[in-house]
Image (cartoon, rainbow, N blue to C red; front, top):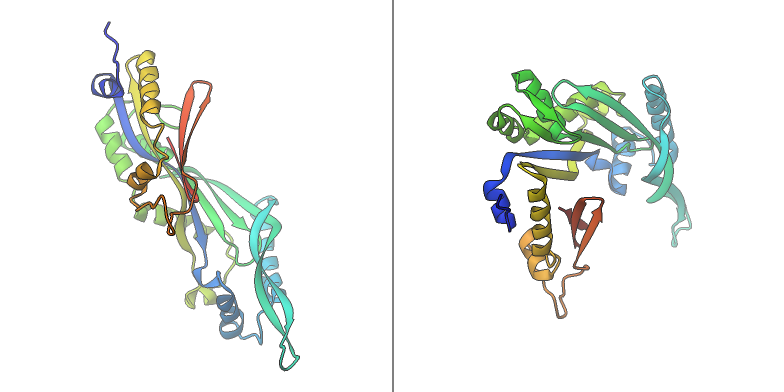
Length: 295
């Protein structure tokens, strides 16, 4: 038996199954027009006809939304969130007081809805229990692929978060490649429309609608090798080859950004590589500004 000596040799002759798939996905949904003070003022004054914007106007909206949620699920748990508050300021010239909106950190209730979708499998949606009720949608690309394989009669062995075996790898890969942003948006929109609504139809008609953005996404390449020793050789070689991936010149290749290492206009941030081994599972972390990449 001849053992492979490099990661390239492992990939070229010892992989019996390979599936590339979007893995965990975390989306944020928010009201883009209610993320700044002037937008909050416009919502309560110009749209809803109040004289001024105040946190007192937010409380009834929050109360109605929380009441609708309590009819649908059990109470949520507390968590930190950025919220809008109102305070009184005094005009230095006239001496008159006026309301002033500002953002603050607070412990508020978050509401979780756990569901099962015929196309996406298990998922959850989380609402912040305070105006303007920003939330998250979590899904898993592997669970999507498993549901589609079941529909097409493709047999597989499901691992914790991957495929162990697949009767038709090419068809499974086609399914994974077919998970588009349009399908994800339709999935999120379908379930957001079925859950309790924090804003009225009149608000929606005035273009106060949810907007989705990607908060976190993971991409996975599952490779089943012909023998365990090949896996150990592959990971050992991969770690050795990537120990310097956190250097500025390598970071610029990963993120497609020009990195200035010296001088007046030096790119901010700590450039480093971190290797963590938990049991037999090694991880390589690359840090750049507020972003980290995990392999």
